[in-house]
Length: 313
Image (cartoon, rainbow, N blue to C red; front, side):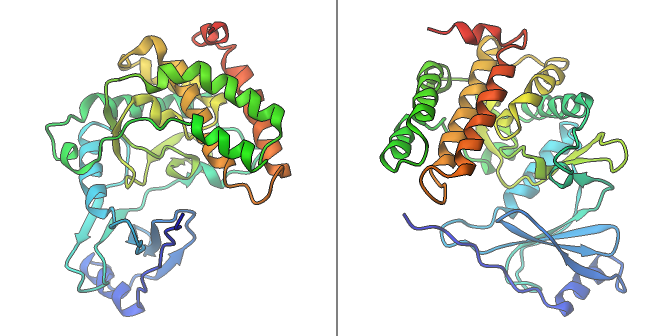
């Protein structure tokens, strides 16, 4: 399989100053910021703006046009996300389309120390914003044309990869296979599709520096029309109940009765997919990842809204 390695687009100091001048801050200090994503380089334009310049991919066009549409749709729905203040697809200043966002106070959850736990109210608020997004962005808007529609992947063939390459101990593969098989009917059946953020992970959730209160959801390049449960898969299972409670305070999920089962199914699918790319068979990181998943699953199915999952035949 060919891996699509992104290539960073060079942005000269002159280009940065040209963009700063367009923003009305010609003397602003401009600098590249660290970024954990594979899709964009991030630059600070003074204290008020962030420039996102997409990397070049062999197989994927830049998602910046999709992001512009998604941000507008999300804000109209009431979702907290930074505004786009400048969009340029002329390719005159830099050789790719780019967007400049307002810079809001806050930091990504991924920047927190491992022992730091955000309060449940933070995750509750994230769930509320997902309810606003899923409920109010409709297919007859521009978002309906720019975001792709996709169906859930079937993770069962990936289990064979784990076994054949001996990437995970046999007992862990058997445990994963048991749960994947039990939950697959709920995940793979037909469900109402909604406008999903598509990548609700810790790097894309901004919180206040002092209180860790939820501030905004960022990075809209992965928007997709999908089962709403998809937006609950990239976060730890331990925080999902608070997110679901926040969501349900504002809206009812399509196919709500099986929501917890579908969320768990997607979590397992994400885990199986990721385990296929371990650096070596039976690695310590693989064993630790499965152990964490076991512990989180045990806690998740003890939650009142999810206890029925434990009794699946």
